[in-house]
Image 1 (cartoon, rainbow, N blue to C red):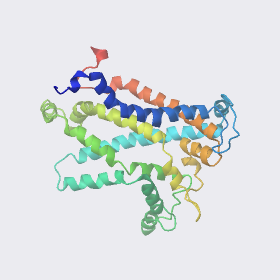
Image 2 (cartoon, helix red, strand yellow; image 1 turned 90 degrees about the vertical axis):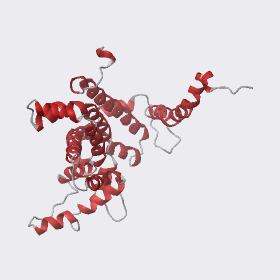
Image 3 (cartoon, rainbow, N blue to C red; image 1 turned 30 degrees about the vertical axis):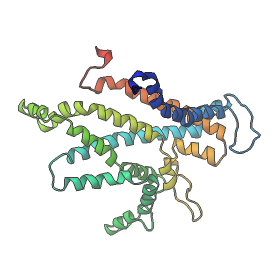
Length: 307
């Protein structure tokens, strides 16, 4: 009997390959989303079987929650600062390390290493560095005659969180470096021959060619930064019996408020409502960036909409 070829069964082959992903999506993504939405319509506290259906009451309460909206505004402000600095910093490092330097591989590794350190370890390390009494940073400042600064409380806690976030620019740097190395050298040389300086050649030739990568970095940066939660919790000053302390007001971001509703107030229904509203907000920001991309993102081939 002749051996049957998989090409004779394209539909079976398709379902064979897509099946594991579909099962994982249904069990690990779709089902939790549906469960979270159903929970947002109840007063479930996480453990008690005595919960009841409350409809849209959690969403109505959220509309009047001043603390949640203040946390959201702080989160948006934090994102508006961190994302541009992160993208610009990653691009700047990539430009510097895209040159022919001695031991360039070593320098690239040094700048990339912080991005692979686990976020918990990074937060704890920076908490030790920024400690008021025994921190390395204050010890250096005292040498030059500057009094010790309390970095982990307001108002400096906000800036400490920004520094901690920007410390891991290496991941974005690697992506930017790959994009820069894909720019044809002859295009930059042609611009220089036509009289363009180094900055004009970079702005009008290099940046448009790597704009899809910049777009990717902006979108992923917005999504990740809006959802930040571990760093503010671990940077908060604690006592000897707690790993998470009182989060300063300046770093009390939206996801920190969600965490408190879930694990401190045991309001799983209200916390789920906060997450669903936040999902809509993040989706809105993402769509706005996607909508604006038609004016500043340039592709090597025209999209179907432009044909």
